[in-house]
Length: 546
RNA sequence: GGGCCCGUAGCUCAGCUGGAUAGAGCAACGGACUUCUAAUCCGUAGGUCGGAGGUUCGAAUCCUCCCGGGCCCGCCA
Image (cartoon, rainbow, N blue to C red; front, side, top):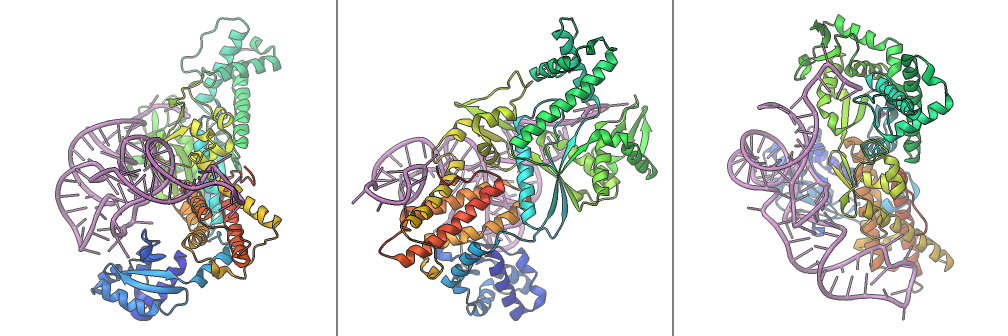
């Protein structure tokens, strides 16, 4: 709808003021006003044109009005508030929109213009189970991907496996220590080792598989434990993600960067550009040249590469793979890391904006009004698995998108289990079930949807529903452009609310008025299709009955 | 000390690339089921949008300062 009004205004401006002022349309607002007296849509273009033309907004608005009045999509156009232009859509226009919703893939768009975007999310270390924060990032990334697919982008999904470096060694030592304990030997547990009980389980499993492992030289045994643990835990992570309905196209191994010499290669490249220097026995990257607070170490004085070094190689690899843009989903505690990675990207010759970072804020769980504390089994955090078992996947996915990704989320477990209207998942699902029920009931009684008399759908509630369905297209564009998947849940709650309001005021199946009934059934089908679509994109169930 | 995020109704939060009288849910109060699902709806009440300046036709939204809360500042990942 927005595009349409925009288009019409553009053509009016073109006729009156000429091509050169078309640009203001992009900056102008086109919105549904809060007050219905102000029409179905309103714009402030006249104010913006006033600045350019140095004339009064009011007179400019009136000039535009003369042209806009004549267009058949509008029943009425008026100027108010000193220069706002208010549009009232004609009934025919609503009919056309409704038909589009019914027959076309109206929600698709080409906003992305074919941009190849690499979405990287979760990327948890294979040293333990996923926690709820990972889950939130997973859902944000996953839904973003699904929406981008529908809005003209070419996204790909990637999980970066941190299977190299210190934390994997530590994992090996932790498992080794537990195996020693299990076989009754005294062995000091490493200072920063992984203390979660899951380590004990991995240790048990490895002992069963390789009973003689403890008779091997310690170094060798630790290495085996590290590899085994990494694989086991990665499998667990993959299972959690599958159950959360989150998928990936590429599993990218950090280790492979070392094995293929990519880390050395990229550091050499940076060295050739004169962007590295040795100091105190370490190798530093001049990130301050690109806006970072201080230079950063890429190779420690003991010869080991830092995590940053492999991350540079990783992003270099992304650049080499030819993506137009990379979007990384990170935990908000990593935000201090952004300037140095962006600096590295510039050092590699790309614009800093080539990389976008979506930050995921903390998730806190509440049950019976109290915060759910860390479980011993997991180490020191609540696992995603526990939460999924507790409230189900649909609730997890939906609730993770109830707040913008960078604001902290308090996850109310009691609410997620509630079957009342206060639970937004049920609220939306109930709307869907209700729509299905009406359609079933109508069929039983010999009614069927028809597009013969759609002009009868002229009440405020019906128009709201028609416009509401169609705006899915616009919402998806916003989700993709602004990387804000939470908008989709809000949209669905809003559409469900419009449906419930309609339902309580109007009767669909009416023996006295079969024509209106048939038209309303068409509307019901359109709303059902739209809610179903929205839930599908979220990958949340749309039950026919509840 | 430096940097980032946040402060909107009693509570949880939308709205923030400037637009008309600031929204929703929960909680409170009052209503609506012989009818297509009451897992729903309608109404009432509730606000100096943390504070003070500034930019302008117009500010919750942009700028500056202040107050309050969170997070980050490693040759960790």
